[in-house]
Length: 112
Image 1: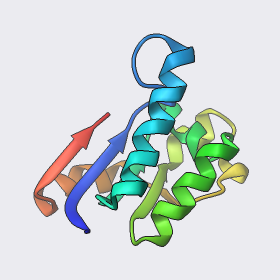
Image 2: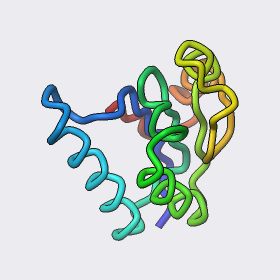
Image 3: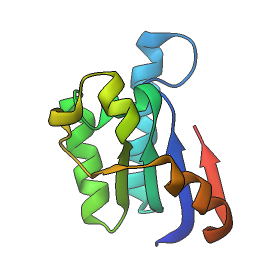
């Protein structure tokens, strides 16, 4: 069921411990996919753009979520910073204005 949710992903791991953080992040998105509780939009910023460019396992999960109707964007400034502009494999290049506009357009804006 699609919800009026704008999800912002700010990193490629959840929590401080990188090893478990990668597993937890993957599980988070697998749960979104399995339960079909998909947000309207997912916006990746900062190191989060590594999930849409470098992490093949996550790219496959995100492509499935995108196919379910979620719009996926990665911060263009962040892609440039990490030299990943030509490596985007899921979703589209986005701008920070989308995040600011989401404050008024969506019922919930969730930062992870």
